[in-house]
Image 1 (spheres, rainbow, N blue to C red):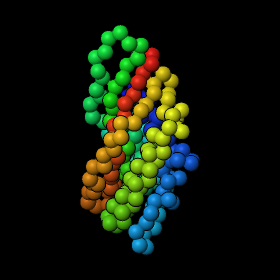
Image 2: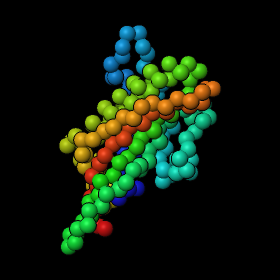
Image 3: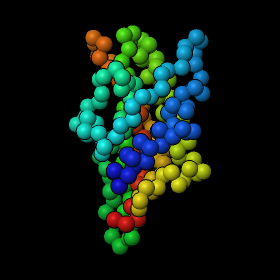
Image 4: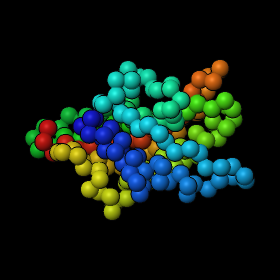
Length: 174
């Protein structure tokens, strides 16, 4: 169930119509701000050794990047006698970029996070129900999206931000 939720979101964020890069140009900009660079690299924890180890690329040619992974506890109610299993899962989308100007990097992170949120809003519309199914697993929105504070470290190392989305998944073939 966890694997499918991560992969559904990872695939969706790359979509040419509703993914992050498609949503970036439509994010309202303040004043003379410019649209952030497109996401170059999309990763997820079941196909990237770096993300599986809690790491992200630091090579400039792979940035900015998004990494999708499960975070927090998975809550699986004890239900007996059903033909399916539900769980509540938090999926986190990391945004990582590098810029010599921390203020520019933070601004771009904020706009990109807004594009991620817009993309997820599209994913959870009824018209996109089929995009939230992978194998025997269906994913449903809970309406909970959290955006933790941005994190910046010194000396031109990456800036990171995150979007945490809480979803309910149903495995019809547990």
